Length: 255
Image (cartoon, rainbow, N blue to C red; front, side):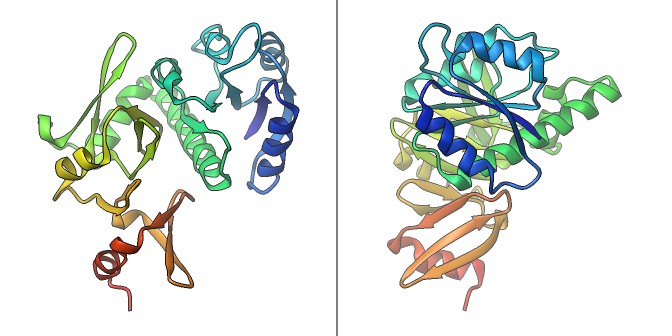
C-alpha cells in the first residue's frame, strides 16, 4: 500500500516512518504537516492510505477527511491523543483510530484492516454492490439479529449496528472501548464491567482488565517470565492479566 503520513509534529512523523519501515508491502510515498498540504499531496500522489493526525493548526484532520470526494478517497486511519474526537472521526468511515503514542502492533493491525477494506471496496465496485452491504453480509454471516447480539454504536447522524459475532477483540480506550472487526474499529462509550456481563457466553472472553478476545483469533501465545501475550491473526498484541491466565490457558488447551 502507498501511504501518506500527516502530522504537524516532526517527531510524530519520524516515528510513523520508523514504524512503517517494519511493515511489509507498505511504502511511505510522502508526508504533510497540515490539512491543506495533505489535500495537495493526496491529489498529487493518489495514496492508498492516509495516516491523519486530528489536531493540527488550520484545517484539522477531520475537516481534511471531510473535504475528500467519497468516490476517490483513500483509506483513512486517524491518530490523536484525544479520544473524544472518535464519533466525528468514524463519521467519515475511518478504518481505525489510533491513540498516541502509536504502538507498532496496533498500526500494523490498522494497516491490515485498511488493506482488507480496500480489497472489499474493489470487489464491491466490480460486482455493483456497496461496501457496506458486503461488510454487513460478512459480519452477520446470515444470523438473525437481536438486541442482545450486538451493539448500536452512535454516529453523528444516527447509529450503526455491530454484531457481536463480527468482533474479533475489544480494548479499553480511556472513557471508551474499541470494538475491532475485520474491516474497521468502532468506538463506544461503555465500561468493561458492563461489557463483561453482556458478552458472557458470546465467545468473547475477558483476558485483561482492559481487553476481551475471541479465542479462535489467537494465532500465537508468547510467554515471558510469568506473563502471557496473545498475538492475534491480524497482528495485534494483547496482554493477558495475571488473574485471567489460568482460565485462558484452559480455554486454549495450553500445556
